[in-house]
Amino acid sequence: MGVLDARKAKKDRGLNKIPTASTSDVAFLLLIFFIVMPMKRPEVGLSMVLPAKSKASSVPVRESNVATIRVLASNALTLDGELITLPRVRLAIMDRLAGNDQTIVVLETHPDADYGMMIACLDEVKQADARKVSLKTTKR
Amino acid sequence: MAFRRATKKEAFIPTDSTGDIAFLLLIFFILTVVFTNETGLVVSLPRADASEEGIRDMLSNVFINEKGMVSIDDMIVRPDQVAAVMSQKLAENPFMIVAFKTDKETPYGVVSDVMEGLKEANAVKVFFNTDLELPGVAY
Image (cartoon, rainbow over all chains, first blue to last red; front, side, top):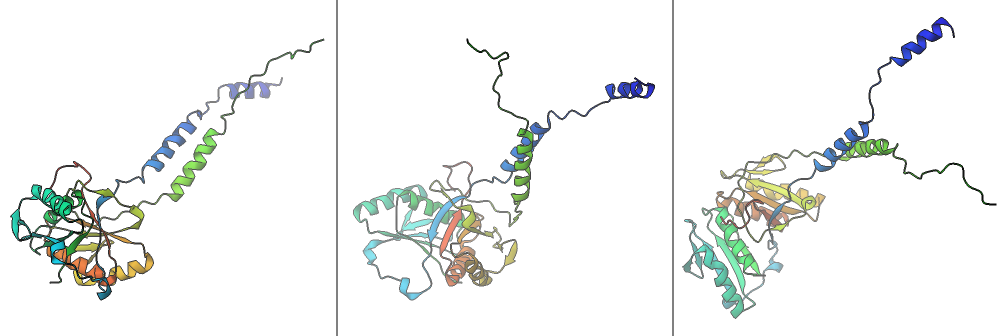
């Protein structure tokens, strides 16, 4: 062995290497980050189908089949003209449905009433298992 | 005469390529991930027990804050412009559901005006977003 070879061998022994054993662990951590990041909070809410603007969608109904809930400007509620509290709405609608399963619930909200109160009413109506619900809208 | 193997070889699953696979998957997820940054308007949603989960991909968000400002796709619009904007969006996606992200203290009149615009645009499927947290606490 020459002098140069011996010097090279000595140099190689002392060479510091960057440890690469944890590279895959780092990759997996980044992978988990990119898989989890796009996951967002689920969208929850109440779904409805509005009546279309066409005249063909309007169907005449008997007045006895309609239960009208009104949200007044003061956020007070009436059911068919009689004052009612929010917790009693569900039971009242369930009673109406038990007597007449064709009952259509019409929710009429004053333009100055809170949207939150309308949703609270709609929630009670949905919980009463009313299938036919109509939201009254008016153009100001 | 029985033949015996001199050395016994142990079976093992090679794990050398795990890092490569992880990096390939990483590259795939980095390239395909889409970070949408829809700011909309700051709203405090109402709560409802009868809430159900909506299909995110089909929802088109309409934000209405307590002052009655309406925002569609980060663009402030007047209620009378809703029909035109929504007609265009409905043409792009016929299965679109309009998600109302409305503040619980918004006057209903604004929501009603927007719904009238939706009826004109024939975008009749609506979804009233509610707050996910604290279920059971009504408005």
